[in-house]
Image 1 (cartoon, rainbow, N blue to C red):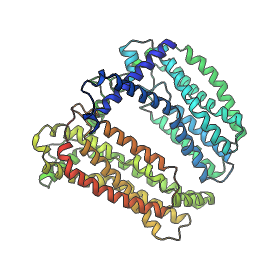
Image 2 (cartoon, helix red, strand yellow):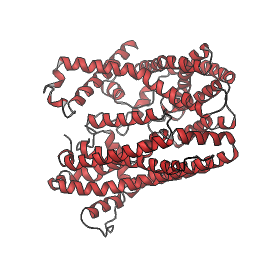
Image 3 (spheres, helix red, strand yellow):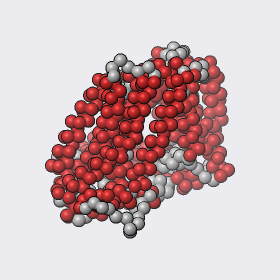
Image 4 (cartoon, helix red, strand yellow):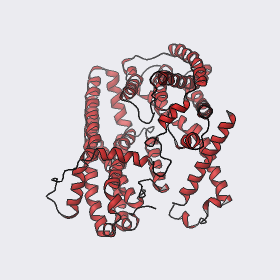
Length: 525
């Protein structure tokens, strides 16, 4: 088994190093400084392997630190009660969700495809060795933060050390249950395509984690100790079952299909996405528009792709309305909820930067634009002329901004209403600042995605993302928004800064598109 792990680890490291080398060639300035025979350069290979190793080490700790601090420790500031009890209460239900969402076993990835499908490695040895390694990284990565944060909330050291083991064993139990279910039904669930029932369980656990404490109901440290010990004991039994399971090859034959894995030329992830997108296109030859020129061209695209562009926004609108009504009801009947909501809105507006990042549909819309329009149109020289690019861009930016503003304005108004209902504020301008700043965030992300699309155009003819710069900027955007969740800033100050930054960014971005898009908006090779 150790031999299988070493082969798989070298395979993953080589793939990652080659990806790093390829990515360097995509950077605008660096690519001219690199040799033509990139993959034959010994120095470049050593550099790529060093970066790959650093990435592997960072992956052990950084994600766990952000998770435990933001999702658990930071959340305690919104509650009144025993911090130790609340800490283990939230951790318990989030751990169940983590085991459902990220099993480390049922995720169809490229390295698994290469190893088991192409190199024909033993499925059981490969799966178990990499699964144990993933659990070891989880255990080691959680230990320092469970000790640091656990001691801060008053947990005994032995329980702080038990927390990572509890999380590991919870994953063992969920995975063992999935394997037993496969034995009966011969069907395994892909963790990237969760079922409606799984989503319902996840939503229920989130409510139990964060809503129950508002009613002064939560798992105490003593109850958590009992649950942890039971989970660990059951986990030991699950570990033996996982180790003795002998149908991993059948499982991965189901998981590693064309739609799930995009490692081959004709089996890209974008291809699977494209199939899903095409199902939602409505084509009617009688459909037309009263507009003319580029506005006519854009409106026809919007009419035929209305379902893709508006479905998610409709769902978001419904969720926001339901949450606003439920929260309003909770504020009226519970004084603790009332105080918490007022404090949260007045100090935690940065949290909603991440919320707006998640609900903004700019990336999905630009993806649909390329797959079902620009993918073909960019092969015509006239479509790449400055006048055509800029006129189509203006029509698109109006549509994207207006679509994303619908849930954004509704969210801003809901927050302003909840602020008023929960006791209000002495600064009347705060109500307007909340609404305008949320709208500014929405406009910012709408413009951000569209401008990145026009300036970096990441797709090739097969709709694969081939721009490392685009991927890095997307990653940085996510990291900054995620980091802001943990910041507490006065609503008025943060709102003003957000509005100002959004306006400046939008102006600069539009100027860049005007000057550079005619050169950069093309299909990648």
